[in-house]
Length: 268
Image (cartoon, rainbow, N blue to C red):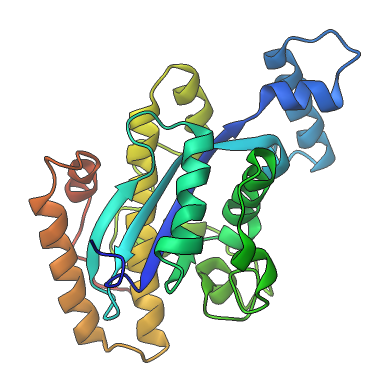
């Protein structure tokens, strides 16, 4: 197995609104259907934000896909997995995630983009919902909940001076700046409609794309931290591209990513 060889876990979560919970908590006396309750809540959020966003808080969502890239100590790519594929059951996704974090890969650091602001709190709430233990995560002050440690590296935190500036453009911008695909045929706003249409595998594929983008942004962050040179980054990227190319049949999500890969030179 690759447990001991894995030093970093890059992960991303795709989630959908828990319409039953929204209806139960906010509109229990209104006789709305669950979908009606969702639309009313979205209008409320949009109004409260001054027309900026109707994004559903993590407290009212649940995961439908969690994908992870396993990296070696030297930042090279070992593998990418999608938890509980092809069934994508929220309870089992949550169980497998915390099993990995707490036991199988407890020695590894994990890497996210805005994981501290969304992905990790969502999975903590799912552990609470299902009664899944995550003792190290919650009790060890130097574990992933410690903002300035190295157990959890949130790249949005890192690249925004820990929230001092707004990371306008997000992961999509940071990926495209270094020549990686970023957002392609699917955007985050599409996920719930895809879920309602039963497109669970397509959601997982989108999650894989975000994990790859996060991985390459992480590599560039290690360049600016002087943990690897720009030349070494190029070598690692070439090896990753070779891995992606060789595994297209096993992981079909790789195909679209390769088709949108560019040889990029920065400007100005």
